[in-house]
Length: 418
Image (cartoon, rainbow, N blue to C red; front, side, top):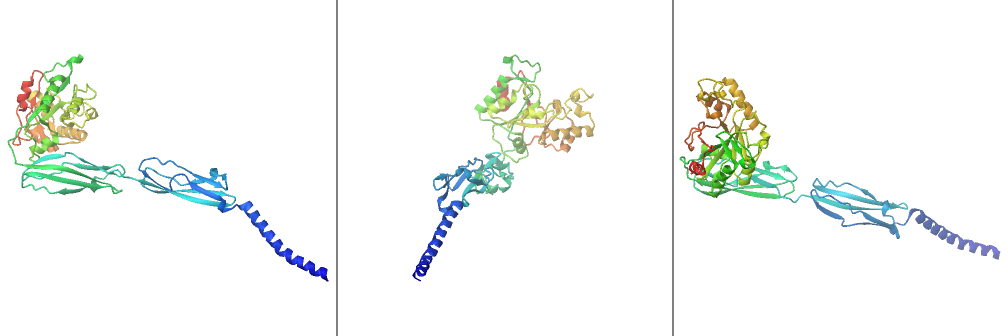
């Protein structure tokens, strides 16, 4: 009887001990197989949030993972992608799993654009006549991310065209990232001067005898003489006009400085292009002076003459040919071709130059019919010879020019422009 009681007592003691032991064994076994989440650590290298400028490459810094003291960083999975060429917020995920326990982390990458747009004015300062009309000379806004945002420009124009004075036109623009830019144009309203005179200079060919180059025609110009002309203009504060500035002056839309000239070159032959000597363009760019080339568009590729200092206008497409008809000044082909032939030629030239601002008659030869065809084609100005200055009262299709010949001296040149 006593033995049975002792056995019962032992059983009562063994059962809870066994249960506890089983629980301990279970827990130990579980963590041996599944791991202890408290022992697993995951830490980012570097900050959890990074801000990068648009276009700057994102370099992944990675993370570290340990289970107890064991380095298990090689098992980390990195999920996500950063497009550094596109503004936005990007999430990079990090995940590590070991012994069936896991941890996760996240890094935020902000790609931002902090660069301001650029506003480009065709001219920073212009003069217009009192009681005329202010016409926008041209403004463009570009952004490093959005591209052309000119349509977003807001203009604040407080010009009083009825009063002589100096005014500002303010241009503001904001890009998609909130970066803003501002630019100002000075507009001077001045008294009208319809009798102001402008010398229009006419060159043809350029050569450099110091390099053994020759040119036998009277309309050849030595590079040294051309430099002397531009040097004189620069030293005496003359403005070399663009064709647009001259056209606007002739139509009373733009006031120009009293000391202004228009430099023109005919044909596109020796020394005027990058393919035939390249004398003209480098000198214009060196002195930062504008000129206009009247190009025979079918004879040479217009791309040979591209420069921000050289406007290109029409000298016909393929009618710069003389002695083609009798009883007509110099027999210029334009004067004895049919109206349809002439118009077709002019339209072809316009399609190449992309401009109808100005036309130059071949060999200075013209008649009334030729003038009417030039008008019909849409040209706003036409140039001839004449050796005298132009004013706003000059017929816009008989604009005279000073032909610069080889024998002309610097004193002759000074006489033309003064």
